[in-house]
Amino acid sequence: MADIDIRDIQLPSDLLWWPPTPLSWLTLCATISLVGVLVWLFFRYRKKRVLYFSLRNLEKLFKRYQSDYDASGFARDISVLLKRIYMTVGNRAVVAGLSGKKWLTVLDEGLDDEPFTKGIGQILVSAPYQKTADFDVQLLYVLCRKRIESLQVN
Image (cartoon, rainbow, N blue to C red; front, side, top):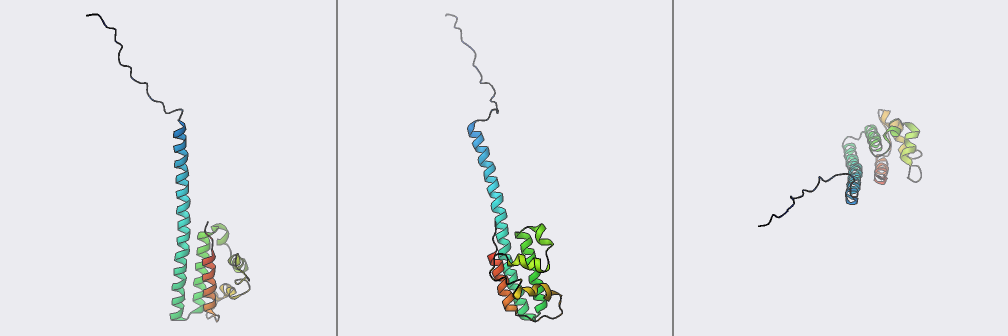
């Protein structure tokens, strides 16, 4: 037999991860975009959930008022509830320091007729600090419900 000259098996060189292929870049961009969208959806869902639970809490406060008829306590609790909602949904640093007319002006944003600065909403500034308060609780309840329902979640 003749001597056959056969070459050894050639092993492929190690695959390099650099430079990445266009498909790798596309996968990376899609993954980053997906994570960003999921984070945005999570925070949006959380804020919407805050509004849902706020409406439920408002209902509880009104039912408690109907059992004990403490209008001053109702106004105090509503004021605290609205502040918490705005600190969660809005700009916490700005809302936290607001009180008095400035707070009522923020509550009026997006509503017609300025019901907080010129209407029944004014009671939120004074009633929480009074021993007994006399105002239309039903009207304040409807106004606050309207305010919570009208809030926009970004």
